[in-house]
Structure formats: C-alpha cells, structure tokens
Length: 298
Image (tube, rainbow, N blue to C red; front, side, top):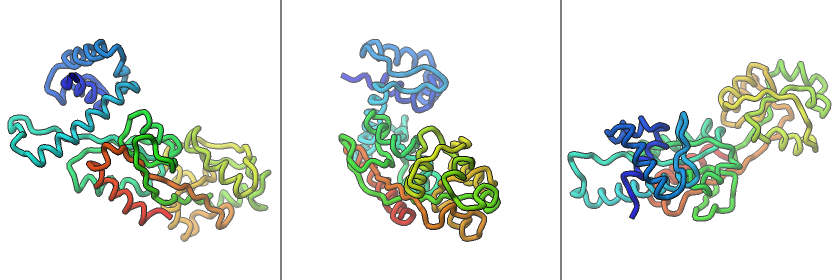
C-alpha cells in the first residue's frame, strides 16, 4: 500500500521548495516531514527529493508528485458528488496543478488562459517555463500534467491539440538600423551587428537567417532571458531580435520598431498536450487555452 502521508510530504516539499514549507502546510515539524520523506526513500531504495534551496524532485519523485496531483483531483471530484465525506474540522486542501509553457507564450497569450481557468475553478497552477522544443520532455518525465509544446506528435499517454502559430518579427529600433544596416541587411552586416538571444536553447535568430538570407550566420549577441526585457532592449537599440507579433504590433505601427526585412516573419506552430488521465479535470483549462490561442495566434 502507498504511504500517502509520506507521499504527501514529498509532494509538498517539492511544491514549497523546502521541508519547512511542507511542515507549515501540514502543521507538523520539519523533522516530522524529514522523517516521512526519509522512510519512504528507504522503503523505495531511491532518492525522491534533491535537497537544496529550493528542494526539487528527482525523476522518481516527480512521478510520485504527479500521482498525488491525480489523487487530489480524484478526491476533489468525489467530494463534489459526496460532500458528506468532507471533514468539517479539516477543509480539503486546494490542489496545485503543474503545467509547462514557453516564455514567449507566457508573455503574450498563455497567462490570459491560465487566469480564465483560475477564475472558473479553485485549482492552483504551478507554471514551469522552458523552450517550446523541450516542454514535451517535462511531460515524458512526469513533471507536468500539460504543456504548450512545439511537438505535434502526442507524447506517450497524452492528448494533443493544435493551437496555431506564434508569429515573430525580426525587429530593431530605427536608430539601430541606421547604425548597423545603412546599406541593408546583408550577411556581412549581420556578422557584425549585435543580436539579442534569450538563452542557449534559443535558435530563432538562426532559423530566421537561414530562411531569409539562405544561411546561418555567426553573429555577436547579448543574452537576455526575459520576453519583456527582450522587447525593451530592442526598443532601446541594444540589438536586433525576433520578437512575438503581439508584443511588437503597436511599436511597428508607430515606427518605434522596424522590421529588418519587411514581411520576413517566422511562424512557430504550437500544440497543447495533456496527460490523458488528467484530461477531464483539466478540461476547463484546455478550453481556455484553445479559446485564447484561437484569438491570439495565427
């Protein structure tokens, strides 16, 4: 039989990031939490929590955490049908659901969908951020129940729905264009002009260059892992960048930004993948995601 008090302790350590946070949530001492986690790890012969600041789940611990999410959703559904099972002295704990998305989706359209879901239900959300090429791996490893991803093929055990494409414009400030591209955007000019890159996983600039200029060109870059700061840095003339269309539409219309090559956009198809076991409880979130994406994506 599963030791649910110990499993709950593991899940809360991961959710709060510390043994102290889990102890506060369960109204016990940190030593009690530590003992529960240690005993379960010894029983399983596997480390479930990587101790640190914050504490994070191992791969095996992540699967246990997702199981506890499923248990929480099942209990919530059961109490909805049989409210007499609830203990008035111990109100049911709110369930936190783990999902993943890419930073540009979060910074443009996904948050509106998450907010709509939060207003309709009493679920809490823990939103992880990774590149859209890698969020599917969060599903494979059991770290999230649903994800915005670039993968069209369903992850094993998941349902997939197309969302549309997030369009990107290669943009820069007028002053930046005048300084770095006085004779146009050429391979030689690109090789000298500083760009903005989100992180080491970000390949948008190279993909745009291959499609637009026919080759991937090595170029200097500033590293800036923030969707909003990416836009601000472009406006300030720090570099050229691939910015999401919803964020630059007004700036392009007002002339505060210009396209490096007019009309040369880059579309990134996105998909919503949901663990099949969680599809019903997450149906409201799926509806919100699909509705928002239909309005905001191309």
